[in-house]
Image (tube, rainbow, N blue to C red; front, side, top):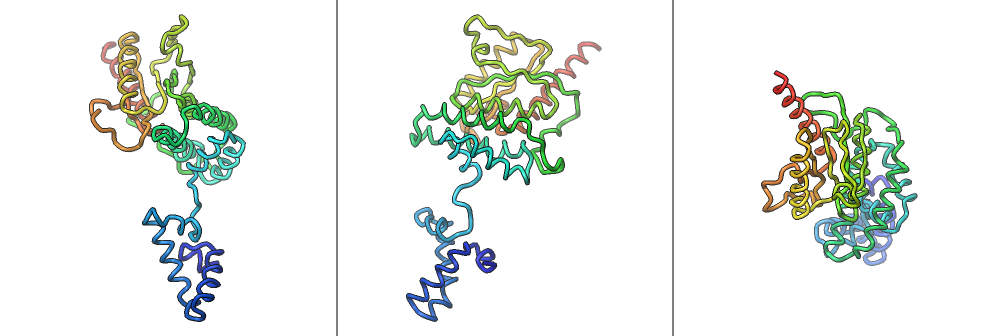
Length: 294
């Protein structure tokens, strides 16, 4: 077993390989069983056509945590997703779990819809399962306050945390993204008001009431086209509420966007980026108010 871990082979594969190669070549096969099996595992890790060797013989999990979350959300098994989360949260903060597991898992779902592997109608079930998971994890207290987490509290200067209004985008997974972002902002000390996308569109006679909020966040999974639309919405809101700033996030894909270099805050990649952008916007507003007062 120790030999298997040191080479990247599972304990079972070490035993099976020894028996198989001994059966094929006798004592010589026993001697060569580990090198030959390890060669197959390495081949599987670097050549997609032989990936099944790595899955069967290697010691790495078949699915990453993000893939496992996506699988359970796709099946509507929020309880199983929470069980996975409880294990992972023993070694990481909730913010890190959201950034490294839930957000990438929802990106996987969006990518599968884009390539036609999953019906778009399945997105509602995935979103509902993700939201149910987030509700059950909302009151989680990190075991260790020093567990490494995304640097969401650092930035150029510190201001007393204020009020933020969060709207989901129009995508099928955006409600879960907005709920996740709102939770993380509350953990950073912000007062967050979550409002429906209908109010953002002005449907049903609903209007936006900023109250004391200076920051409006529009959160979802945005591709370049959706980000362009959201930027126009953001410009309209900033023209309407001159003393506010609109933050848009997050990117549907982590790869750099092509052909939209004029969009900056529209394609923030992580919730850490969103929090950092809020800090910059509040500093900008504070410095502008100070200039006017002087």
